[in-house]
Amino acid sequence: MKKYNIESLVEKALKGNIVATAKLISLCENTDENEKIIKLISPHLGNAYIIGITGAPGVGKSTLTDKLIINLRKQNFKVGVIAVDPTSPFSGGAILGDRIRLQKHATDDNVFIRSMASRGHLGGISSATGDAVKILDAYGCDFIFIETMGVGQSEVEVVKNVDTTILILIPGMGDEIQVLKAGVMEIADIFVVNKADKDGVERTVLEIEMLQNLSESKDRLAPICKVIARDNQGIEDLAKAIHQHYVYLKENNLFDANRKKRLEMELKQIVHNKLLEKTFQFVAENYAIDKIIEDAYDNKTDVYSIVNKLLKKVVKI
Amino acid sequence: MKKYNIESLVEKALKGNIVATAKLISLCENTDENEKIIKLISPHLGNAYIIGITGAPGVGKSTLTDKLIINLRKQNFKVGVIAVDPTSPFSGGAILGDRIRLQKHATDDNVFIRSMASRGHLGGISSATGDAVKILDAYGCDFIFIETMGVGQSEVEVVKNVDTTILILIPGMGDEIQVLKAGVMEIADIFVVNKADKDGVERTVLEIEMLQNLSESKDRLAPICKVIARDNQGIEDLAKAIHQHYVYLKENNLFDANRKKRLEMELKQIVHNKLLEKTFQFVAENYAIDKIIEDAYDNKTDVYSIVNKLLKKVVKI
Image (cartoon, rainbow over all chains, first blue to last red; front, top):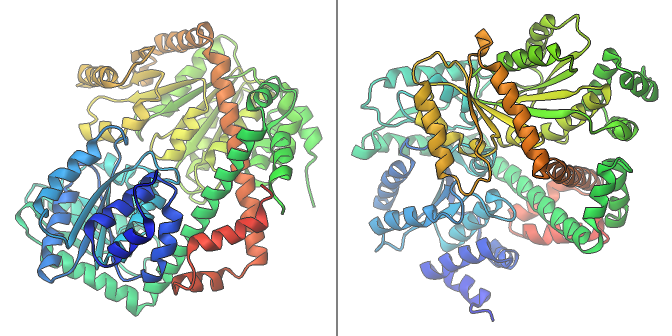
C-alpha cells in the first residue's frame, strides 16, 4: 500500500516544506513516480541558478560549497546541494557524508543538502540529478549546487546540466592528472585553485593558462580563482566570478540558449531510456534469449540479422 | 560511385590478404557497410583469443604489446593489434602512432596493427572495435590485442569485450591514481607492474595486493607480473600467465560462458544503436524540435508528456 500522496507532497514542497521535498526526491530516485511528480511541478520551474562543482577526490569540493552556502545565506538566498558520490548505493558512503554535512545547517530550512550515489539509477545519475534539481527548484531554491568527482563519463554528463561549472584543482597535482582530466578541463567556466597556501600554486595556475592557450577558439577565458576554502579566503571573489559568468551568459544570449540545449538533451535522454526499457522488456517477455545467443555463438546466424528481425516487431517507423 | 566490392574484399581477407583486411576495417569505421561485412564473415568467427591491455598514459602499453607480439611470432602465431587512442579523430594522433609502430613489423603479414580514435564512432568505440576484432579474426589472427587507456567509461567497455584483461601499472603512481582507477582495477585478470627497475616496485605490488584483499569474494586472484618491457624482462612469465588464465577459463567453463555474455551485450548494443538512430531520424524528419523545446521551456508542457506522445508514434509495443 502506498503511504504517500503525490499531489499533497507536491503542494507542500511548493510551499517550502523541507520534509515533503526530501520525500519527493526519494520517490524520484526509488520509484517510477518521477513522471507524475515532474508533470505536477513543471509549471513552477526555471527560477533556480544551477552551479556544478567538480574536481578529483580531496580537492575540497564540499568545504568550498559550504563556504559558498554561508556567503549566499548572508544575502538571504535559499540554497540546495546535490552531492553525487561515486560509491556504490549499498556502501552507505553517501548517507554518512550526508549526515555529517547536514548537521552544520540542521536548523536552517533554507539549506537543503542531499547526497546521491552515482550508481544504481535506472536512467543514469544524470536523469536522477535532473529530477532532484527540478524538485529543489520547485521548493524555491535560488541556487542549486551539484557536486561531482570529475571521474567518469556519467559524472561529466551531470556537470553539463548546469549554468556555471566550477572545476577545482589543488597545487601539486602531477601531469598525469592533467592528462586524465583533459576532457573535464574543457567544461570549466571557472577554475578554482584551492589550498592556495600550498607550494606550487603559481605552477598550477600556469598549467591551467597553458591548457587554455592550447584550446581552440574560446570566446571567453575562464577566470582562475585562488582560494583557501578552509580559511574562507577568496570566497568573495569566487562568488563575484560566478555572478560575472551569469552576466556573461545573459549579455550574450547564452543563458536561455544553453538551457534550451539542455532541455533538448534531456528530452533525448528520456526518449532513449523509455525506448530501451520498453524494448528490452518486450524481448524478455517474448523471446528465448538463451536460444538466440546459442545460435549466434554457433555461427548459425549473425547479430545484425537477429536485431533486424526484432526491430520489425518493435517499431512502426 | 563505390570503388570496392564487399564480397570480393571478404573473400580476399579470409584468404589472408592484409590490404583487403585493412580496407574492410576502414569500411566498418566509416560507412554503414559494416552490417553486410559482419554477415558475410560471421560463419568464420571464433578462432582468435582476445587480450585487452589497459593502463594510464605512459605506463608502456605499446612497448609491452610489441614484446608480446615478438614472443608470439616466435611460436608462429598470427597477431592483430587494435590501439584505441583517445585523441580526436581529426588530430591525426592515431595515424601517426600507427605509422611509427607499423614500421617495425612492416614486412610481416602476420602482424596487423591498427589505431582507432576513441571518439567519432556512431555506435561508440566499443562497437567499432568489435567489428575490427571480427575482421581480424576472419583474417586468421590467433591473438588479437586491444590497447586502451583505462580512462573513460567507453574505454572500460572496450576492455570488457576480451577474454583476458591485462592492467599495467608503474611504480610511483600516487594514491590519487589508485582511487581514480578503482573501477578499472576490478576488471584486471592479470596485473603487470612495468618499469620494475624503478624505485617503489614492491610498494606498488603491495598496494595491488591490498586492493585485492579489499575486493569481495574473488574466485581467482589475478597474478601480478613484474616486467621491464623495454628490456624484454618478464615477458615469458607474462605469456605464461596469459596461458594460465586461458586454462582457468576453460577448466571452469567460463570461456564459452563469458563469450556468450559478451554476445548478449553486443546484441543489446546493436538494438540500442539502431533503435535510437531510427527514432531520432524519424523525429528530425517529422517534428519541429525547436517549437517543442520552446513550449517545454515556457512550461506549456513537460518533457514526459512530449516523450509519451512521441513514443506512441514510434513503437508497436
